[in-house]
Length: 302
Length: 263
Ligand SMILES: Nc1ncnc2c1ncn2[C@@H]1O[C@H](COP(=O)(O)OP(=O)(O)OP(=O)(O)O)[C@@H](O)[C@H]1O
Ligand SMILES: [Mg+2]
Image (cartoon, rainbow over all chains, first blue to last red; front, side):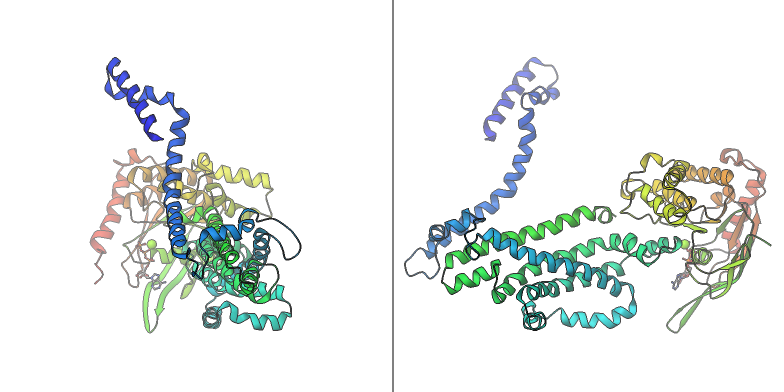
């Protein structure tokens, strides 16, 4: 694609440099002849540079997978078989044919909704608790050891307790998300708040900002880069936890779909679901990172 | 009498079992509208003294009286222009000043009045044009000017400046010194400024407070600068009073209280 354009430029350039007197003006006359292309070219290049390598990798993986799993004795289905068996799942994420026969898109949305609720709660409570721990030496001494112990408990270990407490799968799953996501948020917020420069505290003191004003005018913006690091880790953990929790609690989420598919030996469906989960998890991470980037652009540049 | 009274202030820092006495028996009376410079070698305790006046650091003994009343907590009546500007990087220039103005005048001035007051103070330091920029996008001198605007906008009884021009090049520095002189002449604020620069001290001050070397720094000498205002830096170069004042400060700093390298 680049080849003919390049040739055209060279031809035009030669022409001008022959007729013109100064060789250094050569590129200028060539520019107006391809204004759109000139704009698209760098954009297309960066898209190419960023998209091509992962596409090649995926193609190679699919190829090797196909070769490795194509024999009749293979226990895992090759990509072609997956396409045959689960084509509707891939091409129609949003079909709806009864309460359990729905597209993977809908299931993902159900899981995302749980994550949204649990994660939002974790974000609010986590930032507040983190602020407390970061701000007060005594709160830190009292709470930090407890947090350090609790945060190592695997998400699913909370599930029986929360099922016993809530007696319902929906709030239990949300609680598991909450308890999984909250620790990195607390810990990173606390570190961010401990790192608020003394200068900012002095400014707040001279202005006599009260606790609430100090919280949202100094603390949160100053600690925002740390808070968003915590949120980003938290959202990743939430997504890990929801799939596992749904396998156990049932319902219509993507996690239960995998469990259900396993029980009826639909391996192809499981593999498609895994891809969905991976892509959505990746997008969630990018979304939080993007929000963080926008929100903290002031703080980060200093 | 006196507008601001620093009354027998001692300051000791305790770290574990070790105690360092930084300031010893500092007493000073400052009149309303006076411009006082504090000069002394690095580490002698100038910032500590200023922070005590600001209320950011408590005095170990002694205290600060403002208009006869003791002050021991920070407040907008003693605005500080910090050594490193201390602008909040996530706020624009305008919002940095607005934070102070809205807090101090929130109940007194209407929204429109506050806006005019913010712009008035930014214009005073010639920063109105950059009101929508963030601190990272403006130069060091501009940041320092915004810091001054923020301090002035609080309409403080006393403006405390901690080496406000320390990190600036000579030209910017001269320019800002002129701005501060103009503002001082126009508004008649009481100002206390810390500086390392002898010329700056003589040019700006009514009185220069010279501190001895720490630890246990004291006020070594206080020099009155009897120079008529407005002062013009170029004319002063050959002025006798100016030269004499300059010499007195230099003598104090480099003969009688030579900077001893910390071991
Ligand atoms: N929080 C503190 N704890 C212990 N010692 C301190 C503390 N703050 C300041 N000091 C000590 O007090 C002394 C004076 O410090 P200060 O910052 O007031 O000096 P300074 O005169 O402003 O110096 P410079 O001109 O370099 O800014 C220093 O020796 C410093 O080590
Ligand atoms: Mg200092």
